[in-house]
Amino acid sequence: AQSVTQPDIHITVSEGASLELRCNYSYGATPYLFWYVQSPGQGLQLLLKYFSGDTLVQGIKGFEAEFKRSQSSFNLRKPSVHWSDAAEYFCAVGGNSGYSTLTFGKGTMLLVSP
Amino acid sequence: GAVVSQHPSRVICKSGTSVKIECRSLDFQATTMFWYRQFPKKSLMLMATSNEGSKATYEQGVEKDKFLINHASLTLSTLTVTSAHPEDSSFYICSALPGQGGETQYFGPGTRLLVL
View 1 (cartoon, rainbow over the protein chains, first blue to last red):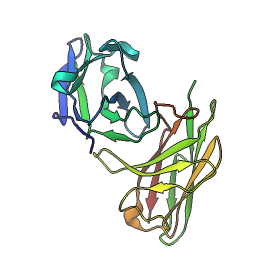
View 2 (cartoon, rainbow over the protein chains, first blue to last red; view 1 turned 90 degrees about the vertical axis):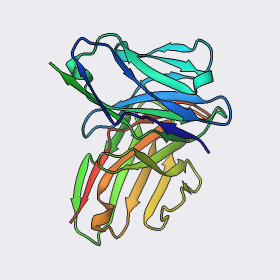
View 3 (tube, rainbow over the protein chains, first blue to last red; view 1 turned 90 degrees about the horizontal axis):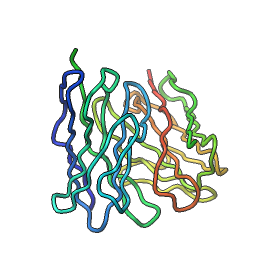
């Protein structure tokens, strides 16, 4: 069975500082990996995704993530955090069959301090 | 592109009544849509997979007679919470897969349900 672990429930980062959110997955084959962001009371917005190819993927809002197969990780990074980045971030894994359900991590709440 | 809407955004109902939530893909066709439930400070729990023109596939533990799903067209899926009870109060989010066999789910803004 597939699973996703986000070990940090919440993280506080100073505005302008760099950010890394951790995500580890368990999946029996090559996974499709996603990062979504959710603002309070809102739905989920896709930040970026990895299907194949270059293991460093670029997303919207200046985010990037690196797929490391040997570590079963897909960590999200941003070089300089803005106050508007404060939100809940979810990592998700899906299959590569062209149609599959997603399994989400429990999320990491990002707080940005002035 | 790839916009998904939900209606209503929030609803309050009395215990015992039924509530219908609509999920629409606005600029693409979606053979497959998903319904999730999210509890406060919790992750998303997949309730069911909705396939256009066929019966929905429910996850284990989800009562199909309580959460009725209809995917009558390629742009619309509905979730009806029947005989709602206070424990059904939650945030319900839908997502849609563009085309057939698409890999990326696009999410709606969610519907906040409060059952009194």
